[in-house]
Image (cartoon, rainbow, N blue to C red; front, side, top):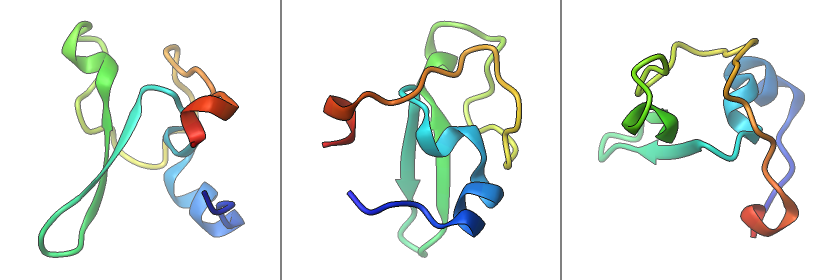
Length: 67
């Protein structure tokens, strides 16, 4: 896994490093970040507005989930 650039971190925010975030790439090349917590908790938007700078559900990825 490559290290995120500072610009990428600023553009995406917490979702970039969150255990509950899933990167989705469309057929047209657009990239979205889906919050998997939204499936069980309506307080979390399915596709949060980026950058996410504050989130009560944020859990950092562990070394194992980054593989």
